[in-house]
Structures are given as structure tokens and as C-alpha cells.
Image (cartoon, rainbow, N blue to C red):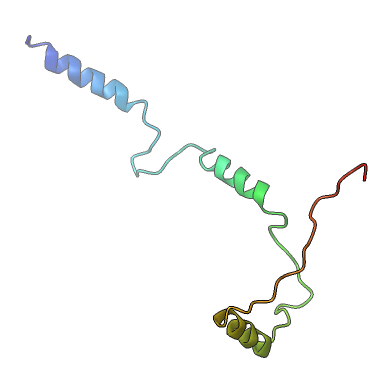
Length: 90
């Protein structure tokens, strides 16, 4: 090992450190960081700021209690069949 090896290693390490994307505070300085996550979220959300006529939807504690009892007794009401797609040509 020559005496130049430590100097070359130090120079190489300092050059690699210049490629870092973080600042001295450790924060990421890339301005587009997180854009892919935001775009994915936006693609999955129909209305990110929904406006409702009433803040609380109508609920019934009695109906909820009856549903729980039916669930415990394994007598759950079968839901209506809903078709979500239309077929052409029929």
C-alpha cells in the first residue's frame, strides 16, 4: 500500500459526498420528492374535498343493534344483487 492510497480514498469519498441530495440539515432538497405518491393518491380519490349537505349522515342505533344481533346469530340479511357493468348486445 503506497502513501498515496489514503489521499486517493479521501478524494474519492469527498467526490461521492458531492453527489448527495441532502443538505447539511438532513432534509431532502429535491423539489419533486413525493410527487409520485401525490399523483397516485390523486388518481385514487374521486373528490378530495367533498361538500355534504349535512355533516352527520342519518343513523339509527336500533338498526345497528339489530344488525349486530343478526350477525352474532349467523342470520345476516343477504344484500341485494347489484350489477355494476352493462353488457352490450343483449
